[in-house]
Image (cartoon, rainbow, N blue to C red; front, side, top):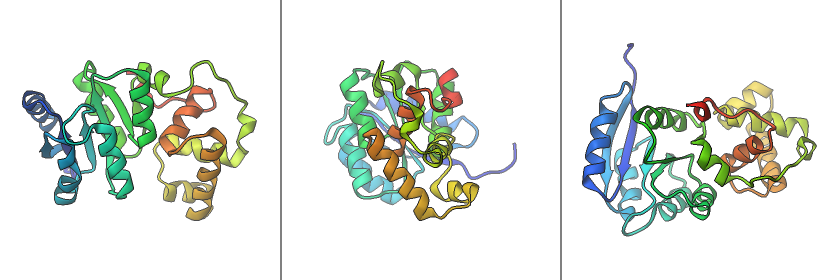
Length: 218
């Protein structure tokens, strides 16, 4: 395999045995490197500043701050890191709260190692990573909406966001400015009553407007 810069990972979990097992497994995978660990939620922001991870693998249940509060703090401080929730919590209220807080992916601890590794790789490049049962709970089950709710350009922007394109990449692909991309996304958030691009993508997937990422089929 060609030399490459590994994806830097911050592991957070209140159980040392869980962290040990994940660290061993992830460090054994191509292109992944665990650079730091946190046992408490209130340690996470400082560790992000110190170690510059690209992905935080985040438990929801932790002392200090829970995973939802950690994610809210990360987004409020505009720390440039993607968040993958890895937890045993699968109730609808927690899932939706995590998505609204700004997680980029959400897996249950029953996921296979291959699923976890793929999810880390996906969120590192901006692709949402949600197992099917979690995706269903994070969206409005049974609700339908016409794709005409969005303009053709807004639908294009959401489709590219769902494929992991950054705002800059979307702008280049559609030959529009970064500011225009953000304007389209802001309008999409308002029309779909969501607070983030992840929520917007998941809502569009739930409505059948765009295809789900490959991860859904793992």
